[in-house]
Image 1 (cartoon, rainbow, N blue to C red):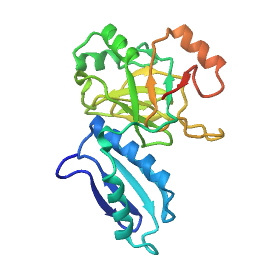
Image 2: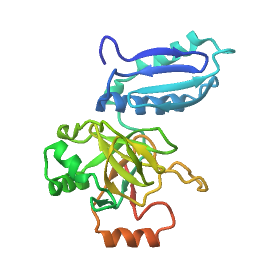
Image 3: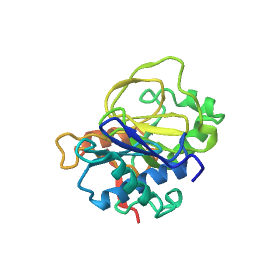
Length: 246
C-alpha cells in the first residue's frame, strides 16, 4: 500500500475500478486477485460481475439505479479490512503442468529470445521448463492467459515487427511473461515453445480453462512426445497434468 494506491475510480456507468498499482508487480497482482474474490463473497445486489487486469479489480454494477458513492464506500470499507498486497490467493486454484516442445520448426524464435535474455538456448529451455508462473490475468482473446513473472533477465522487449502468425497453443515470451495463444494470431512476442493445450473450449462445460491465480509450468518434451500428445489427446488439456493448489 502506498499514498496513491489502492484507489477507486469510476468507469462511466459501467462500474468502479479498484487499482492497486501503476505497473505490474507481484503484490499488486496478488491484491487484485484476492480483492476480487472478497468482493464476490459479499454478494452485493448491485454488483453484476467482477474481473481483474494485471493490477486492478473491476466491479461491474448498476450505477443508474444504485448510487456510485454508496458502492465506493462499500469497496473502501472492504479495502480497509486487510492488507491485500500480502493477502492469500483464493482457494480453488489449479496447478497445470503443460507439456511443451521448445524450439525446432514448431517454435522457431527460441534462439532469438534466448539471445535477448543473455542465455544459451539450452539454458533457456532449462529455465523456462522449470519455471512456475501464475496466471496474472486473462485477455486479448477468449481464455488467453498472461502469466509470470519470469526472472529479471527475461524482461525482453517485444519485437519491432510482427510475426505474421503463430498457431493456437503457441507459447510466447516478452516482458517477463509467458502467454499460451488461444487462436492463430499475429504477435510481437517471440514464439519459443508449442503446446497442444487449448485455453478456450467453446463446447466444454468450462469454456475458459484457466483462472487468474492458477499456476502453470511448461515441462519440455521431445518432438515425438509432442506429436503423440497431439494425436491422442482430444480433451484440450494437451497432455497436461493438473492438481489442486491450497
